[in-house]
Length: 106
Image 1 (cartoon, rainbow, N blue to C red):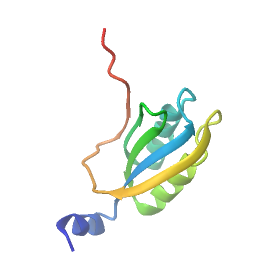
Image 2 (cartoon, one colour; image 1 turned 90 degrees about the vertical axis):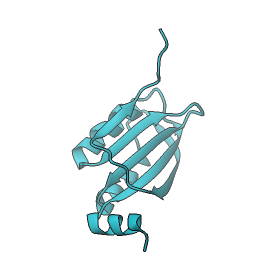
Image 3 (spheres, helix red, strand yellow; image 1 turned 30 degrees about the horizontal axis):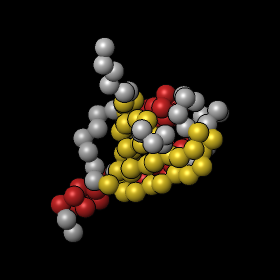
Image 4 (tube, rainbow, N blue to C red; image 1 turned 45 degrees about the vertical axis):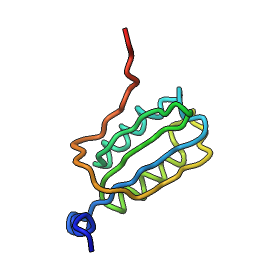
């Protein structure tokens, strides 16, 4: 078993990379995702992608992540989620759950 695998097993935490497709930008998806993640104690980030999808990194206990992914499949009220792709990744040292906004040039 790799050191990363041992770390995952000993901490009991998982890291998921989630891509949400559909009408998911301009519908408060990022803000809602942060509120749900904070409520569940999930760490990570959420950001809009140029291709119109929303990208999420989420870390937490597996049963919480399952519930979080289920929420992502619905999203906030005005969202129309067409697809949710989930892949496991390596744990990162996320301290909280952040909304990544576009870098605006003034």
